[in-house]
Image (cartoon, rainbow, N blue to C red):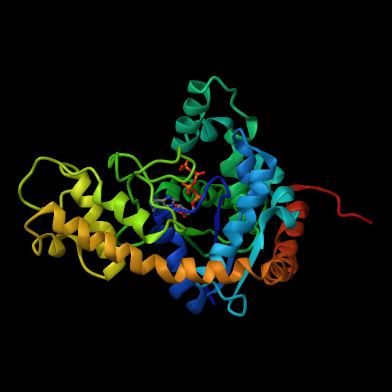
Length: 332
Ligand code: AQP
């Protein structure tokens, strides 16, 4: 059976981008057709300036939202990365096959390091090595498929390269994974700045729809989305990024095709109105289920405890094998 692994960083409140690009697929076909693990990757949240209490709070909230979005602990394993030591153990070994040049070429590193410097902060070493930890997350479980939005495909490529290199040098140890992205909404853009990704660690703003936004807030944000001065509604990601983003969101929420949907609208106002209602309807059950789960924190904790136990048992044989293959003496 195909092994699927993916994760979400508790660096901010989950967004519509996280949902349409990744989480919705995890809760849909991924958990049904495969042996899947989904993880709140909290160690990754420490790679930039952070408030410890906020990371803890967001980790609990992310886990609860994954369950609210439909992840079923009877079908898949849901856990928190730092509860499974194998991730950090394997990360060090993979650092011994990765190069600093590879790390410095990562687009997200360049962007986030520049952002940290602009804010007058220093760049944490863990931000540079973060893709290696992500490779460890993936490779520890013998993962075949990694369902992600397309901002993460470069990191999954790195995990592939490290797996192949390790296998060639030290003997076959890792499954070589591949990224899978959705046909539409693989990169949901900021509604106010449709050339930038809708990112959860961006400052709170009207361009970001959060999963827990009230319906009226969602409507307001979508109705205020930036479009352009064109008169016709056409789907052109490069030249008309604002309308294209709305059409992709609408398509992802209704199951349509962005280019076909464009033909059904003669004004941006009507497109925005339908998009807003479609988003409200897609998010409604997630918000409602999340409210129920908030009233039962013991349930979420139990899921994470059991998830960590299962994940540890799945990761340990591969990580032990990697330790032996690279030349480390097994404990007596
Ligand atoms: N805008 C997006 N469109 C489609 N998919 C997206 N994903 C993230 N944003 C979009 C996908 O959601 C999954 C989890 O994301 P993450 O936690 O790894 O990253 P993030 O939400 O982008 O958070 P960051 O990196 O902390 O924030 P930013 O980017 O704002 O600096 C992934 O599969 C991701 O592809």
